Amino acid sequence: MRATPLLKILRDRMRASGPLTFAEYMEACLYHPEHGYYSRPEVRRFADYYTSVDVHPIFARLLARQLAEMWEVLGCPSEFVAVEAGAGEGRLAAEILNFSSRTLPEFFRALRYVAVERGKGRRETLEKALATHIVTGSARTSHELPEKIAAGCILSNEFFDALPVHRVVQEKGQLREIYVVEKNEGLGEIHEKSSQSTVARYFSQQNIELQEGQHAEAGLAACAWMGDAARRLDRGFILTIDYGYEAQQLYSEQHRRGTVMAYEHHQATEEYYSAPGEQDLTAHVNFSALDSLPGIALLSELPEKKLQRTGLVSQTAFLMALGKRNEFGDLYDAGQSEAEQSSARLRLKTLIHPEGMGEMFKVLIQHKGIESPRLTGLAGI
Ligand SMILES: C[S@@+](CC[C@H](N)C(=O)[O-])C[C@H]1O[C@@H](n2cnc3c(N)ncnc32)[C@H](O)[C@@H]1O
Image (cartoon, rainbow, N blue to C red; front, side, top):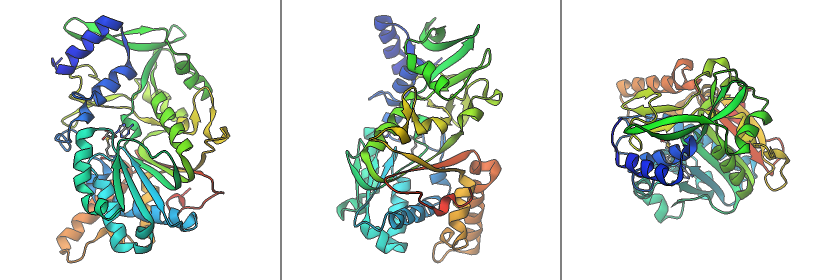
């Protein structure tokens, strides 16, 4: 256990107001304004983790092609708002904008990119990364989603896995919530009846019954975020790339210990309390839950949301379908040597290989205000 500045703050808070839900603990570890892992600039990127965006620009380029097709499906509106949630320091945003301006000029004229990032330090770097596009009005940054999106797409890569989750365990036939408490010099856990009925409803609504001793997570914040995003979107799509499963697989025997992981120096452990604020904490995404407000209704049934599922595919299927169109011609840049081209091909393999990122990551697309759209990225369904 490392005595981080956040550890002291959390222990003082527990002394004043009692145990924290794991969701409250995770929220503080990742987003405490001063000591949260994501509140600081990305100095530790690559030391702790990397994402598809870092592997090769082809990832962003194929996403740009999918966005351009969405724009066409929506009837080529004069403004297409692409809102990226959790844009980090802007690697994906910058490549989507640069590639579109070079290769998809008509789409680029309509493109208004809003890079949304909660962390102040990251937003400052984001602004620098997008500076040339901000000056011309093609992009802007924000700490929150736009209130109204007339036509466009809300997209994200590895955003939902960084939202706080409640943790539960099935004990003596009862669902117990895991709370974080002070223990010795550090932190520990207690299991108690949940103070929120939504946690139990999250599981019952998806027909999930946990086995005795099974741990699991309820991603209430992810569902609330999706409901809010659906309300703000008038016509268009929500495209989510992340690792995770549909509920039946996520809560199966295979994940009996749950899926929360603490990451530091590329090591994934269950030592969630060993360095509060200095480790990345993540949980697999429950893609089934992103179609509903747990305990309330499916998003497709709520009048002001009306969000329908277009499809869910593996990252492999998504990138293959989009790349095949021009035989992955977007992989190369002008003037590259044979060695550089061969390195690009290897990197593509990391993105699409079933044992690499390809099958672990999924692409969920949902739509609103448009009838049964057909998208190339989902052609593999
Ligand atoms: C795992 S990182 C992924 C960053 C980037 N998308 C990538 O692929 O490298 C998650 C990011 O989401 C941001 N984030 C979390 N909650 C957010 C929210 N409600 N609004 C905007 N950004 C948020 C975090 O600050 C963090 O930068």
